[in-house]
Length: 143
Image (tube, rainbow, N blue to C red):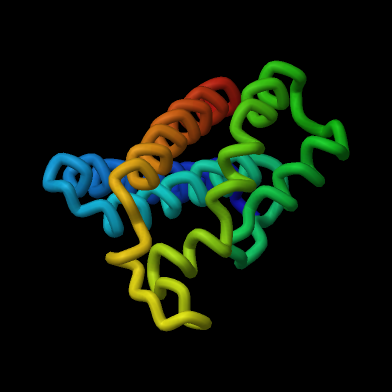
Protein backbone atom coordinates (compact mmCIF):
# COMPACT_ATOMS: atom_id res chain seq x y z
CA UNK A 1 0.00 0.00 0.00
CA UNK A 2 1.22 3.49 -0.90
CA UNK A 3 -0.94 5.84 1.18
CA UNK A 4 0.30 9.14 -0.24
CA UNK A 5 -0.06 8.00 -3.85
CA UNK A 6 -3.48 6.40 -3.30
CA UNK A 7 -4.76 9.42 -1.37
CA UNK A 8 -3.41 11.80 -4.02
CA UNK A 9 -5.04 9.75 -6.77
CA UNK A 10 -8.41 9.77 -4.98
CA UNK A 11 -8.11 13.49 -4.29
CA UNK A 12 -7.43 14.15 -7.98
CA UNK A 13 -10.51 12.10 -8.87
CA UNK A 14 -12.60 14.09 -6.40
CA UNK A 15 -11.35 17.41 -7.79
CA UNK A 16 -11.97 16.30 -11.37
CA UNK A 17 -15.52 15.15 -10.67
CA UNK A 18 -16.21 18.39 -8.80
CA UNK A 19 -14.88 20.47 -11.72
CA UNK A 20 -17.22 18.62 -14.09
CA UNK A 21 -20.13 19.05 -11.68
CA UNK A 22 -19.44 22.81 -11.55
CA UNK A 23 -19.68 22.95 -15.35
CA UNK A 24 -22.85 20.86 -15.28
CA UNK A 25 -24.62 23.06 -12.73
CA UNK A 26 -23.77 26.16 -14.77
CA UNK A 27 -25.32 24.47 -17.81
CA UNK A 28 -28.36 23.36 -15.75
CA UNK A 29 -27.60 19.67 -16.27
CA UNK A 30 -28.98 18.59 -12.90
CA UNK A 31 -28.54 14.84 -13.25
CA UNK A 32 -24.94 14.97 -14.38
CA UNK A 33 -24.16 17.61 -11.74
CA UNK A 34 -25.55 15.34 -9.04
CA UNK A 35 -23.75 12.27 -10.41
CA UNK A 36 -20.41 14.07 -10.57
CA UNK A 37 -20.96 15.53 -7.13
CA UNK A 38 -21.67 12.08 -5.70
CA UNK A 39 -18.41 10.78 -7.16
CA UNK A 40 -16.54 13.80 -5.79
CA UNK A 41 -17.99 13.13 -2.33
CA UNK A 42 -17.17 9.42 -2.54
CA UNK A 43 -13.60 9.98 -3.68
CA UNK A 44 -13.02 12.70 -1.09
CA UNK A 45 -13.87 10.21 1.64
CA UNK A 46 -11.73 7.57 -0.04
CA UNK A 47 -8.81 10.01 -0.18
CA UNK A 48 -8.99 10.35 3.59
CA UNK A 49 -9.39 6.61 4.09
CA UNK A 50 -6.41 5.88 1.81
CA UNK A 51 -4.14 7.87 4.11
CA UNK A 52 -4.51 5.08 6.67
CA UNK A 53 -5.86 1.82 5.20
CA UNK A 54 -6.64 0.25 1.80
CA UNK A 55 -9.84 1.61 0.26
CA UNK A 56 -12.82 -0.73 -0.07
CA UNK A 57 -14.30 -1.11 -3.55
CA UNK A 58 -17.74 0.35 -2.86
CA UNK A 59 -19.77 3.46 -3.55
CA UNK A 60 -20.65 3.54 0.18
CA UNK A 61 -17.51 5.00 1.74
CA UNK A 62 -19.22 6.24 4.93
CA UNK A 63 -19.10 2.91 6.82
CA UNK A 64 -15.37 2.48 6.20
CA UNK A 65 -14.66 6.09 7.17
CA UNK A 66 -16.76 5.68 10.33
CA UNK A 67 -14.90 2.47 11.26
CA UNK A 68 -11.59 4.23 10.73
CA UNK A 69 -12.70 7.08 12.99
CA UNK A 70 -13.88 4.55 15.57
CA UNK A 71 -10.46 2.88 15.60
CA UNK A 72 -9.00 6.20 16.78
CA UNK A 73 -5.88 5.85 14.66
CA UNK A 74 -6.13 9.31 13.08
CA UNK A 75 -4.52 12.39 14.59
CA UNK A 76 -7.30 14.37 16.30
CA UNK A 77 -6.97 17.33 13.90
CA UNK A 78 -7.57 14.98 10.96
CA UNK A 79 -10.33 13.06 12.73
CA UNK A 80 -12.19 16.29 13.49
CA UNK A 81 -12.16 17.21 9.81
CA UNK A 82 -13.25 13.71 8.74
CA UNK A 83 -16.15 13.76 11.21
CA UNK A 84 -17.45 16.94 9.52
CA UNK A 85 -18.17 15.12 6.27
CA UNK A 86 -19.53 11.77 7.53
CA UNK A 87 -23.19 12.90 7.20
CA UNK A 88 -22.61 14.08 3.63
CA UNK A 89 -20.74 10.91 2.63
CA UNK A 90 -23.51 8.79 4.19
CA UNK A 91 -26.25 10.74 2.40
CA UNK A 92 -24.58 10.53 -1.02
CA UNK A 93 -23.50 6.89 -1.07
CA UNK A 94 -24.33 3.88 -3.19
CA UNK A 95 -28.07 4.45 -3.29
CA UNK A 96 -27.63 7.93 -4.73
CA UNK A 97 -24.95 6.69 -7.12
CA UNK A 98 -27.49 4.25 -8.53
CA UNK A 99 -30.29 6.80 -8.55
CA UNK A 100 -28.20 9.45 -10.32
CA UNK A 101 -26.89 6.91 -12.85
CA UNK A 102 -29.85 4.58 -13.49
CA UNK A 103 -32.88 6.23 -11.95
CA UNK A 104 -35.58 4.28 -10.14
CA UNK A 105 -35.39 0.91 -11.86
CA UNK A 106 -38.25 -0.51 -9.77
CA UNK A 107 -40.69 2.11 -11.05
CA UNK A 108 -39.01 2.67 -14.44
CA UNK A 109 -38.22 6.34 -13.82
CA UNK A 110 -35.11 7.65 -15.54
CA UNK A 111 -32.59 9.75 -13.60
CA UNK A 112 -33.25 12.91 -15.64
CA UNK A 113 -36.84 13.00 -14.37
CA UNK A 114 -35.78 12.34 -10.76
CA UNK A 115 -32.90 14.74 -10.17
CA UNK A 116 -34.15 18.25 -9.51
CA UNK A 117 -32.27 21.53 -9.44
CA UNK A 118 -32.53 21.52 -5.65
CA UNK A 119 -31.04 18.01 -5.41
CA UNK A 120 -28.19 18.97 -7.74
CA UNK A 121 -27.45 22.07 -5.65
CA UNK A 122 -27.51 20.04 -2.44
CA UNK A 123 -25.13 17.49 -3.95
CA UNK A 124 -22.65 20.04 -5.27
CA UNK A 125 -22.58 21.92 -1.96
CA UNK A 126 -21.74 18.64 -0.25
CA UNK A 127 -19.08 17.90 -2.85
CA UNK A 128 -17.46 21.29 -2.37
CA UNK A 129 -17.29 20.75 1.37
CA UNK A 130 -15.94 17.19 1.08
CA UNK A 131 -13.24 18.11 -1.44
CA UNK A 132 -12.14 21.01 0.76
CA UNK A 133 -11.85 18.72 3.78
CA UNK A 134 -10.00 16.03 1.81
CA UNK A 135 -7.53 18.66 0.57
CA UNK A 136 -6.98 19.88 4.12
CA UNK A 137 -6.42 16.34 5.42
CA UNK A 138 -4.00 15.53 2.60
CA UNK A 139 -2.05 18.74 3.23
CA UNK A 140 -1.98 18.11 6.98
CA UNK A 141 -0.59 14.59 6.55
CA UNK A 142 1.66 14.89 3.50
CA UNK A 143 2.38 18.61 3.16
